[in-house]
Image 1 (spheres, rainbow, N blue to C red):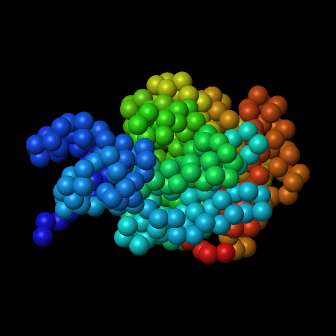
Image 2 (cartoon, rainbow, N blue to C red; image 1 turned 90 degrees about the vertical axis):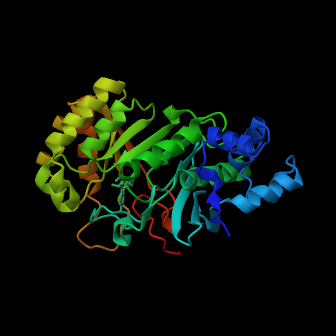
Length: 346
Ligand code: SAH
């Protein structure tokens, strides 16, 4: 028996060519493509405008690898977390975050994570594998359906802030975004998509060279190398000077403001020096700072800084004309908040 290929790994052109080779019409490729990507068909049986013979032929040649939402949990604040089972049984998580004006999908790019940020629950999982473009796309499509079901409107924003480091799965993330933004996919504008990275300078430059249209967020957490190296050990290979240069390169090519994700911890980055280093870093390229509430993961070394320090940060940043947003945690009761995604059933 021939090994059946994953039909969703084929581009539209390849699908059209496949049908021509089989002596059929090119547009049959378009029809099947639409079933796969617009109508999210899970089986060839679903493709009702395709003849029975053709469906059988497809069945003999291909499989449709689809994710399944294994467990869906809803938080008291309306946040929804999906534990998603992949075709090989591995699990990733994605989250739907509703606010009054929008619904945001937070999606994973890898199973586990190869980076080692000491404050993040996903880091404890280690990296198992990269997600394929269709596995990333499917998470978004599933959340879009839930957004329609629970909130009566389409998904409005997407953040790559789930499990994994998106820039370590560069090609697949970009392919998924291409599909998400295309009219044949979900037609979501790249301006409403944010890719968050722990800060890998070489890959940030690559994004700039590829002239991507989506937004970039960098998990900074400290603008002092020694501190950053301690809490994000992998950054020993990526000093802040390299990150700065990469961000300058990004801004020169894209004219797109960068967001810095920042958690303030007691005794780690709550000093005046820490604030002033951040202010200095923020002067390099146009940016905004998102102060994220810390979501404890059981390590006593990490405690949210005291509220007075947080307001000092805010006022000093604002005094220096830096835009600051304070991000309150969402979905904490179901372990759906930043840094809590760890395949734990709460
Ligand atoms: N690897 C990428 C994508 C993950 S995004 C990145 O680091 O940007 C997840 C965000 O949540 C990052 O900004 C991360 O630094 C932050 N985070 C991780 N653990 C956290 C925690 N326990 N509490 C609050 N934020 C956390």
